[in-house]
Length: 98
Image (cartoon, one colour):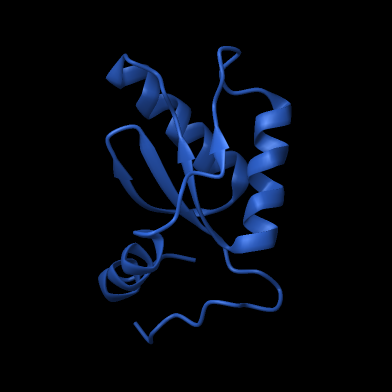
């Protein structure tokens, strides 16, 4: 599923007041962190993930891995914060038509 620009704008506005629900620690991206992201997406559909890696290239690789492993859509990246969306089986967030 690919999001249109209109849908991304809608999700960005919904994500603005949210706080990051998952923060990567000193151990980086582990199986436990990926499981936590998966659970948060199941519960909330739209989440923020904090990736405190200083090196930009490594941070982009971590973000790409999170997106690939979670099966979620990357809505946006602001600095070290990633916004992810994955529709639940019973969607709580109703996206506008593309």
